[in-house]
Length: 214
Image: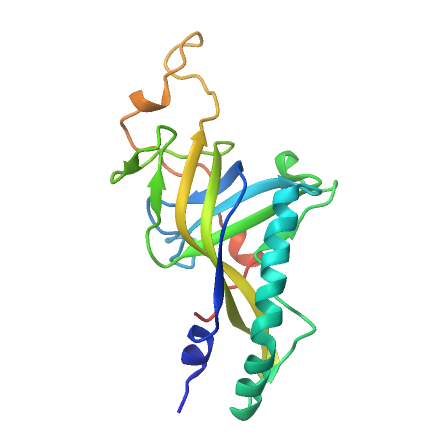
């Protein structure tokens, strides 16, 4: 007998490499844990302009995944006595209006990729990094992820279908310029040996994207 988890894991996915974009809420050197809304996942969020072609590429891919999985998912869930609400699909992005308190998110789209496993990281020199990489807010990265169907438990015995971006690879292209030690000195990326703690705790991210079943 198929379980809910086995049904979800059997759903087909599709791989995408996103366009480069600034990031925030970075959890790639260690999973998000120890906070009120932590889910124990590695994750990273890219910030795109609302009309950016990179957003349209991600949305088109996710829509294809939903169209592909919908028939079999509805059939399997109905056979198991689950109620699947196809009218409320969970997407891996969120739009922010101009009233958003965080200035860097106003009028933009936040796209989040996540994984239970630590992603591979390629630094700005094209070198695979086996140690912690200090990626901070506003650094520019591209993400290689698998768009995968998910099912999110909801109230009153309902389930919402959706798509998650399973994080596989982080391509770091450029570091945001910030000053340390002395106001006139900027340390190049390769000279930064010490691990930089996550600057954004990401507590809000899990209120935006509930933890899915996968």
